[in-house]
Image (tube, rainbow, N blue to C red; front, top):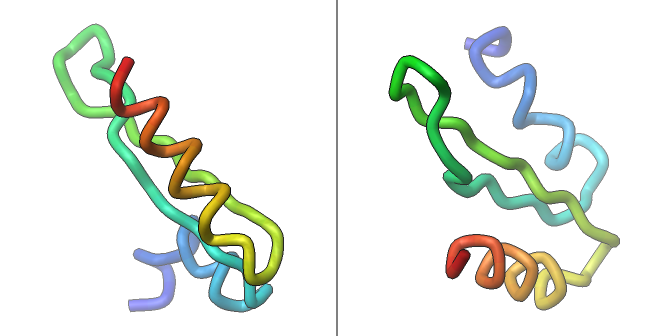
Length: 56
């Protein structure tokens, strides 16, 4: 189980907020995700950044 979360568990271990959002597709049409990490207790900033990226 841990190995399947190896790229997303770092935010939890560090105690910082993180979000993963879709940001496009590769040449085969597979989805690409973008992980945004922020400072402790600064969820508002990463949510604003994610919102701007998803709108474009």
